[in-house]
Image (cartoon, rainbow, N blue to C red; front, side, top):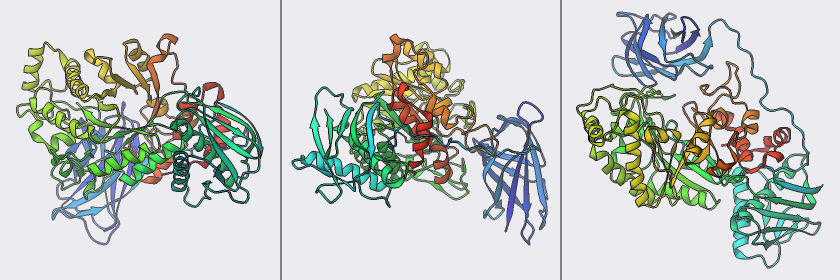
Length: 635
């Protein structure tokens, strides 16, 4: 059957307006005894008004509707219904149904094609270009831009070869950057080789203990290039700069290569991170390694791997196979998890075996990138509780609390001893896979009334003298920190871990995401901080205010110029700046239903964050960046 669904939103009544859904039967046969399922970020709340349909069930973003009793949708006919009482006004065209299906009485699922969300009678305006034409200050391709460069442009060599006497270690490093370039740009010319060739230029390596570990110096003469550094990291970044400039000269007629001169460079921040959410949208291990390659190309050094969330558990845990046999798959007929965020009715999911995770860690390590795992606690755990129901207090009131995403009772319960037994086992398995000193435990968006209807949680609160959800959350986090301390790990979490008394700032790193001022508050409390505010560094945010833009809108439009120009240090007092470890972009995947959407939202903002993490404020130049960034690789 050919079925089509249209979404319309009008702003009245306030505060969130009315969502109207129209299902059209364009087939040649009648549709009877059916239900309609939608996944949508704009959700219908418990207190709502629905005309023309019945809401059979809603779990977070999954909604199932029934038509009026006895409705027969004849060929060419429409079924229309409207809903008031939404969680919020939609921001953009992608904020209503992302996927839809009709389910017949027999259990058969029929696909439904659907439209973007239409904004009442308003005429949308086409978004303007996201990048200006730009202008070059020097005709060299390099992102992030070096912090000191004085060079004269000339023609590019045919290839760069290793000078005689180069060590095997430096040869391996040089060829690893050549291999990185080949993976990112498979059709491009090779950049490095070992032996001289007609038109090639020699590369010599030198040591200087006075250069910072991640710094390097490049000296250019007509006869050779000399790369000087004090450590492998600096040599790797110097080679990356050479690779970017030579690649640019090969593929862009306006780009050249330094004939003479010098580059002296080192990063602005130690922590230059990127987060990838693999729970809401599963990315294969090969796709994850592709993302890591892109980070290596831009000299980023931390990959924050978001392995769990409400929507799916992605890390194989051998002690608890149910976490991936049940908690990693969503579908209409699945035992634990309903479709969410762009799923169809058929099973959707995936997970990483322990061998795959080790392979990702090794791949990143070869590029100088640390892989930090994250398992979400105590909130964002719907997949855990679906997979391991013994972690649910049997006497807790069902649906007693809902976080912002709408899941019922979705948090690890600190009142159950089994909670910490399971976490101890999970962490013990993961620390054997991830050598990173940093282990992220989540800590964000716990519902403000979580656990208050759980008798076992209330017994714990009385025994420990705790008042309210956030003091209980802090007690939970301190227990998890004890586990991580025994493994020699630094606890990392979102800024809410400071609520309710917080955790000990020693060996703790918190990420400020809600708003920039949070980072300063955390630093004053004694925490080391990574700045990742949604208003600048969240790659899922829309890139403009126009209705036709794609992405999330809760932090406002984040155009590339805003990401590039944002100064994470902001109003940090000088005496607190040592607490700011660096910056991080976050790729959240509620809106990422395809690779094309990923590329549209992530670029050019990811390289903008990379340059903000490396290049000093005085050396940033938006127009120069805009002229160069079109050479970036994509997923």
